[in-house]
Image (cartoon, rainbow, N blue to C red):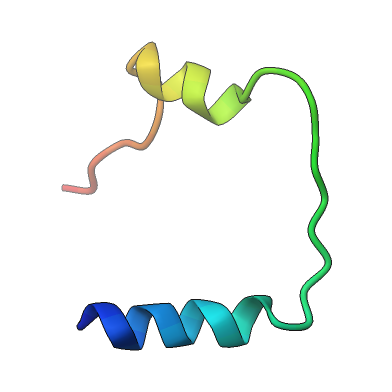
Length: 42
């Protein structure tokens, strides 16, 4: 995807979005770093 198209897409998605800021550690990041994230489909 060209960079300009990606930028325009993100801009349109976030234009009317409500952003929520959270505090604390990411559980998904911790699982990914521990090797317990996504499992490949066979």
